[in-house]
Image (tube, one colour):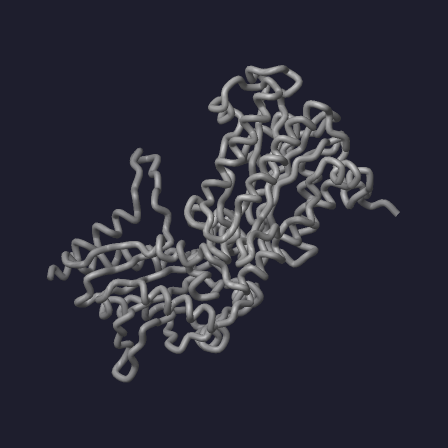
Length: 477
C-alpha cells in the first residue's frame, strides 16, 4: 500500500476530527459536560449494542462529538452536542470520539473491546472542569476509555483488514471558498482519501439506522420531552396573557424564553417564531422586530429544549385579545383540521392518512368561504406537511408517513397562510394560522402532550383578558 497516500488520508481525516479546535477554546462548565439527559448508562449501552447488531460483519464505526462553535474572538456559542453522538454516549463534551467494532478491536496487548471511547484528560479552566477519562468511566459507564490523542493509532489498527467503515465525522458537508470561488464538499474529500488509502474499504453511513432507532422514544426520553413541552406550554400561557397591541414581537419572545429558563430549560430548541400581521404568513420568520397592531393575528411557534430534547408547540392568537370574524373563520378551519388529523392517529395506522385528512378539511373549509374553488387549490395556502418527529432535534430524523408505533413522538400542525395580494377577499389578507401540538403514540392510541396550552377561541380569548409577565414595567416599585 502506498505509504504517502495512507499518511495523506490520515492527515485529512484526523485534522478534520481531532485538531479542528483552536487551543484558546476553554473547556465547557462541569454542568454542561456531565450527562445532560439524565438517562442511565445502561440505556446508552443498550443503544450501542443494538446499533452494533445492525452493522455488517467486518465493519467499524467512528462517531465524532461536535466542536465548539466560535462566536467572536475568544467567545463561543453555548455548546450543543451532535445529536447522534449524544444519543449513543450521553456525553456533552467536545473533542470526544466513539469507535464501535462488533468483531472486537485490540486496544493493547491485554485489552480487546467492541466499543472504545476517546476523551481529553481532565482539565481545569476558568469556566470549569472537564470530565476526563475517569468521568467517562464512572458517569457514562464506558469500560474502555482512552485519551483522544490515541484515536489515530487505534483506528489505524482497527481499519486493517476491515471491509466497511461507517463514518460520522461531524464536519460541514459544504464549505465555500470565496477567493477560489469554489465549493468544497468535505465529506466527499475525506471519502476519496479513505478509498485511495484503503481501496477495498467501503464507506457507508449509519445515519439511517440511528434515525430508525431514534424514532421510537424510551420512557426516559418521553419524560424529558414532557418537561420540555411543559415549559413550552407555560411560555404560551404567559405570552397569551401578556400580548397586547403596541408591544413588539421581541417582547413576547422575552416572556417565552424567560419561562424556558425559569423551568430549567437550557436553550430554545430553535429560534423562537413570533410573527404578527404579515409575518404570521412567513413559515420560519424569526426576526421578531415588528410592533404588533390591533387587528393582527400572532403566530407563536416555540419550543424549549430540556437536557437535549426539544418541544415544538404553536398557537395563534389575536393581538388585541379578540378574533375578528375573518380570523375566527380561518382559525376554526385549522382547528377542525387538527382535531380530524389527531383522530386518525393510533398504533398500526399510517401517518399519511392523518395528513390527508387535514388537507380534506382545509380544502372543504376554504371552498365554503369562497377562498378557493377547487380542492387542489388549497395547497397555495397550506404550505407544509402536517407532522415531523421531535426529540434530540426539533425536526428529528425519520418520516411520519409509515406505520405508527408506540413510543413515536411527533407534531400535528396544520396551517393556513393568506398573504396580502392573494386571490381572495381582502378581509382574509395577512391572516396566518398554525396550530401545533406534540403527540405520543401509545399502546391505547394517542396522547396529546401539549394539551395544557389553550387552543379553542373561547379559552384563548378568556386567558388574554388576564395580565401576564410581559405587562410588568421593568424597574417599577
